[in-house]
Length: 309
Length: 151
Image 1 (spheres, rainbow over the protein chains, first blue to last red):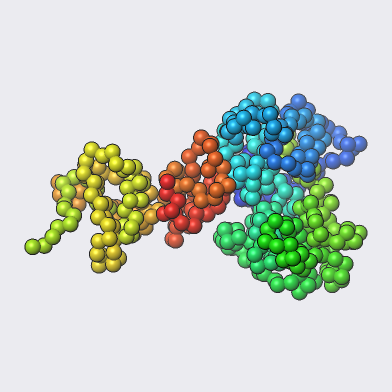
Image 2 (tube, chains in turn brown, red):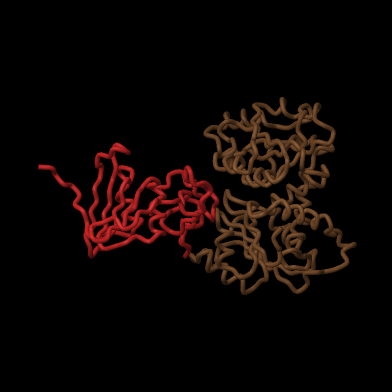
């Protein structure tokens, strides 16, 4: 296991199984309830959230995590009027921001932005999503949710549903799950299957992905249904979109044969992929998943600042 | 009379068994862009017993460094590189795929940060050597056509 003090969090591919398990255990010990929080271990530290793209969950949960630990946050938001709008390069922006903070969370529309930023920053950089590339903290909170809800990741069957081509959360989670003994399934329209470069990396890690044509034939066998949004703009016409989107919709009828402990996850925001009545079933864990983001990000911040070994 | 298309050189490097059509890319890898002080001979589409057709590059008065040789492996995995001293083959190199490639290649992903105005050299990590699979260190995408990615 690598040390975490001062470490950049750039890609889930940089983490071993031992690294991941350590983060999950630290996350489990985090006290999110303010009434129970006994120490403000990051008091005096400043986290910069640098978001070149809009984000709700990632930004809020990082800011919440830092503040729960007693730290402060400086933000770099709306780009209008900023140095970026004046044409500043990312490498220059990062060298400026590192003077104002002790760690940087970066969301950027271009793939590889976080790794580039880390090369120019002497302070740790956390990737908050780079284009269609990586979003490692989302993956860690997804792994935490599976581990926390099902007690173990090994031996589980995980099915990815929806837009598997463009959904970066699916790519990262599929690669991370290769560290565990899992069965992976994909259920997606032909045009939205996992891209070849992800499939080849999964194979390199000694795992295989099976495909199923319909959700119905698979639902009784899975432990985790990881559902993603099918975006309208991926389809040439509205009728085609409606047809495809409808066939990947999770409703109560579909869940009749599901295992009792089966959990449904979704990186959110959702459109119509999961019927609202599913929210009331014990399978629905997507809001819990979003909540887990704070716990997992608290763990990561504690680790990279070295207050937890 | 037998026609001699490519004459022997006294000192320098001969790169043989380049896949037909890739000689100009080999020149680019070697940084030969036109401003040269010694003779450079390029033979394209030459009959070959082994490859049917091949290209040959001869660079006079220059001995290639091992790193340069390995770069040639990116586009000519079966090339032989012979260092010539006083008309004799003094050294023979077999090209080998490098573990990483800095510069030379452009990432094929238009949305990769290295394709923006950032002051960084591209860097590719070798995922597999046979066949060669290179992935961008930054965006993690694999290059599908290495020859086309050469800058």
